[in-house]
Length: 332
Image (cartoon, rainbow, N blue to C red; front, side):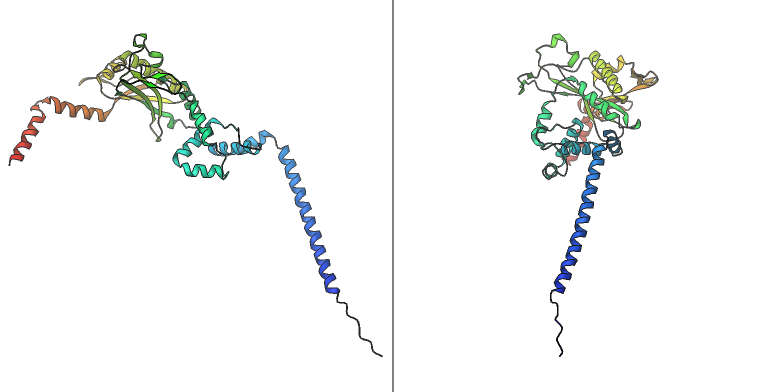
């Protein structure tokens, strides 16, 4: 008698189960290997010395170094609240915030870059107390800046300019009053309590590049005296040279007190002889040149022509001739 062979319907399920079991074992094995690799990497990173990490960071550009160091410092903290930042990084953040406030906030809130908030930046700015005279912190900052500049980019000139101001007193939030004569260390005791009506700025401008830096601001009664002006120029030159810069020229307008200052340094000119430079106060092998602002010369020519005119070999040239010609054309 023939019997029908029984079929095992559970075989496909068992085969499927075995395949899943093998896949699971392989996955667990791969996961175990990955965890072991992560553990080894953590041990290697913890064993990595600060000197080796610093050497790797040094290979990056300077501004990227600031960003990377800030990120590492933030990673060691549970929260960014109360975190202090490097002064140079804060200055970079201020510049970025000035160029694009919206982009700055986006990068900060999304933690794309570690940047201080507005309150931190405001407190940082309050540390800088404005004042008259020469600020030593400015020259200290320039000294740091010149460390990453080549020699050619450090050659520059000083620019001096004065402006007439109206007498005014201003009470600052700190409680002190501004508006009096203040020439820094060069303030004479005779000017104590005298209101200032002139301001003078000493500006540093390199021959290459588009950046400038104010070195000193002075408030005076009338123009700054010639002797005091010469001392300010010498001190600015010496301090700028100590900061790593090269001061090659001093540029100012053609005002009478500036002409007197030129004579102190031996600068003069005539149809026979011209001297436009003097021995450099820091490096005797170099010369310090004095330059008159050309646009100011044109302005003086214009003002002289409109007021009195000029005597030339061909006669007196004045604006009356032009006015007569204009009236004649207008009548016709």
